[in-house]
Each structure stands twice: as structure tokens, then as C-alpha cells.
Length: 128
Image 1 (cartoon, rainbow, N blue to C red):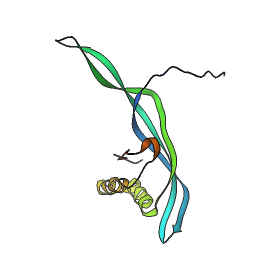
Image 2 (cartoon, rainbow, N blue to C red):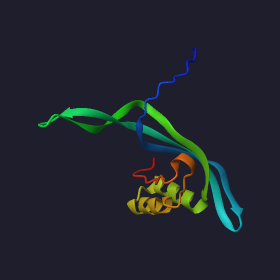
Image 3 (cartoon, rainbow, N blue to C red):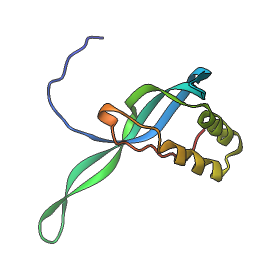
């Protein structure tokens, strides 16, 4: 298959919907803290499209949410996290207790992204 570079600009607002992660470095200690390293990918299943909708006065623009044919990669990286957080995630995967999911989301507030994802706040509704 041949490759062509596209120079046309077409901005698309994507909606991150999934996060895949895996343990890349098991528990280690650093300055008295128990940590581990995960690799992760944030995927987007949906995007926003601006469309014109007729109304009584004429046309107005509205954003609608549409599905990509397949999820697209939004961001990937590696992150060092507290090992206790990783254990909490694994415990939730086994028990599915809502209280544990709340604890995970509380802990995710400290999950700081950098660069183009600066200010992105990760919250999850399920972990499989």
C-alpha cells in the first residue's frame, strides 16, 4: 500500500471514551513509596460535528455526537502511579463494588497529564 500525506486541515473534536492500560513495571520502591508503572492508551469512539438545523427564524448550528467506525487513538503514554492505586483497580475488577469505583475516581484527580492533555481530568464509569 502506498502512502500519501494530506495537507487539508479538517478540525474534529473527539470525545475520549475508553482507556486501555497494562502494568509495564511491577511494584518498586522509590524514596519510601511503593510505585508501579503502567502504559495506557486513551481512545475516542465519538466525535462532535457541527450541523445546520432549520428552525422558525432560519438556520442555527448545533453540535451532534457521532460514532467513529472504529475507535481512534487519542493519546498514549506511560505513567508511574502508586502501587496501592493499581491494587485498588484490580480489586474493583474482581468485586465490581461501586464504593471502590468512587475511590478510584477520587484517586484519579491526582493523575496529572502534561502537554496537549494538560488540564484533562480522567474519570471512569467501569473497568473491565
